[in-house]
Image (cartoon, rainbow, N blue to C red):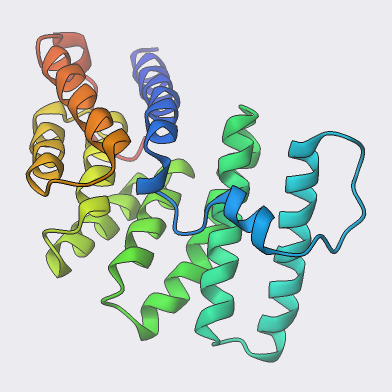
Length: 224
């Protein structure tokens, strides 16, 4: 029973992290959903009048196109990156809809194409961070931690890596003290994104409060 209660707390923490991440969305996505909708042609007929349903349909169509392209060119970095980004964007939409099974499925699907890009470009920190975030939201905390740590080994001053690693440490592993150091590093890097600065400051305050809460600190660290 105790294990189930702890797991429930972690799940609630991850759902709250989703709201925090949306505040600073520019720190988390290489390809925004809105940018995708504006820049790509609408190749499918609309499915009803729901704009979110239209976005889902277009992203699913884009995924199908990219998979066909990869059947002909399985190692093409551009197609692999775009496939990972599109699955990532689909996961973000399902988060907006609060559909956890679908967002987990979508983020999990992004992991493989990102990983294939990293096989040939292991020092691509942007891809590595996106893969780490996708792993976090799909529940693969071990992989998320490995990718964040590797990203920061390559570039300790990478803004998004520091911010997202802080989110992961706080809401994924319940390690607020370590998370504070990452958010503080974000502020030291002096980002121009005011939303990101506000989010980092807010998270520092929340992490400091969490340190005073022994129940929060009692949650076991790990993948479950």
